[in-house]
Image (cartoon, rainbow, N blue to C red; front, side, top):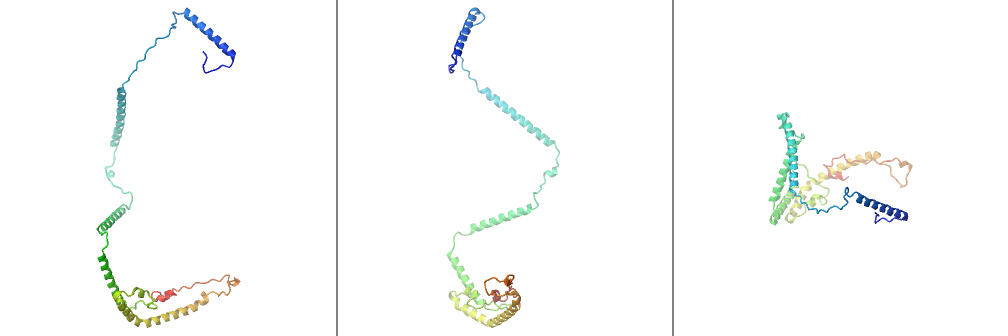
Length: 266
């Protein structure tokens, strides 16, 4: 038989295939006529195939049984392991003892308790504090602070128990105390009067003390001028004499700045 999808290009090959097919058919016909009692050449009977519906229940039963068997095996393995562990001998003392991971575990616990207590206090303070401001309380506080300021202005010019001089600046108008003690409402005249009375006895002593300290400082500066001061540079052009000249800075820390505030400005 020829393939319907295949086309033979050689005509002699086509003729040979047709001839061989005829010989084959003749041989088959001869076999049927001679040996009909031996070979049944009739077409077989056609049987209608009835549909078979397999029930799913037996499959479900088998899967459940397999699961039960697997679970029972796992349970048996767990039971064997537990029995082996129970047969081993362990010391009962070490099993109930607690070993801390680090030496500072107690300190960390105390620190955590302290932080929790502080957080609780802050939360209580926030809860108890009112969410708004009272104008009456603020006015009352302002009046009290104003009274305290007037009292401080009156008390500042007086001598203390140690009979030490109060700190005095160069001039009263330039001092920060004068700015701090600016007139407020009713206590302006009182503050200026008390300051003038308290400062006047000590001005002469302070001026003499300042002159003496300045003289000592100038004398010391002239003695060190030969060592510390470099040569004066007349021109900006570089000269070979000044290649290795160096200025040594003067350190004015020989006098105590606490006793004389003017020395800190030098």
